[in-house]
Amino acid sequence: MKENTSDSVNKVQNLIEWAESVAGAVAVIVLLFVFVVQPANVSGISMEPTLQNGDKILVRSALYQPSYGDIVVIDSYNNYQETLVKRVIGMEGDTIDIDFGQGIVYRNGKALDEPYTSALTTATGD
Image (cartoon, rainbow, N blue to C red; front, side, top):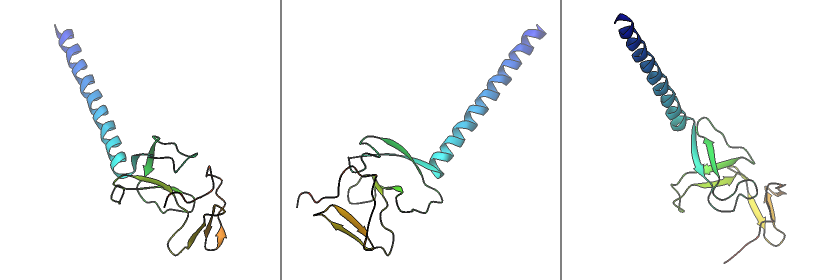
């Protein structure tokens, strides 16, 4: 009888250890997703060919300073009421001009080299 009781106690202890490990792993994942990275969905074709409509991405949300060419996510507190995924082409103080006739984007008077775009920048609609 003592052996059965001992086996039962070991099984319960193993189960408790597994539960603690799983709970710890879940806590770490939750903390990572709250403070370090956040998921986002790409909506639309404006980021093609780099990102496709419907792609899911993870965004670093802590201690980040954008640089030219970075892909950034703008939260849903905007006029579009959805998350926007865009590329940084200008920073504070920069002047951005677009020659829609030639499809060239200028930053501070210099044409941008944009190998990540699938087409020239053109005006559509009104």
